[in-house]
Length: 331
Image (cartoon, rainbow, N blue to C red; front, side, top):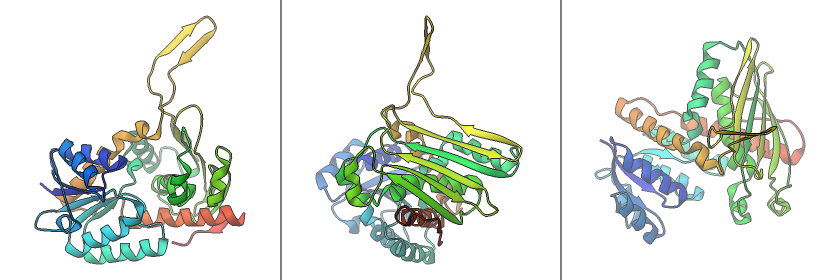
């Protein structure tokens, strides 16, 4: 039974802590956070212990695997430390906002031979897994067009936008990964355009809150992704894949399945209030897949290369936003 430590006791850390504690095949031992009180509260809530130093966490005599859910600017450092002492790691994206540093860290981890998985949790969505099965089976023929929608319910605070890396790196990057995974292909070029409509102030960070991206796949197939920070009607995420012989789609999720009929009107349940409510089950599923890979000795997926390739697409898309041109993707 692998002994786990969790790095990060913020919102997403609390999600992972609950999943770590609930997994029957995990010995959840330590929680570390720069805020010691926050670490202690989360540890107590889930039967773990709050570590007082990183030395306690990166001690292979006590810990077999770490879940890196700390602030983005610490991911690379923590991953490198884990790899240096032979501790497996499940890491939130990105490895680092700087792609060159992310590549250097990934290369170090790969050379160490330690098991590392990037937490692109949407790959573990039940509906998206079925899309992948249908595409791989050849049921819809050769993929020609993929349309993905990522529309959040409300703007994050500008303080978040200032450090997020921008919409391409923070929000749309999940859908760059899904596009690669679903198609089985690496996009070769990207065009992105966007506007600051929901919050004009985001423009001061050279960012947008409403965007449309087109990826060109090898052979000419296209991917279209629209990303929105604020909808006003709930969280809206869906995917449609058109092939030469048919189409498959994963529709938007509602928060219920009740329809109310009155006169000439029909009122249906609405969408989930936020992104977390929509994707919550995927976090536990991703963790379970990581644990299974450790137990079976298989390489965890998504890999470090998957993380780097999604990030390379995000970098090219960010450049396209600024240049107004179709940009090549440099993996």
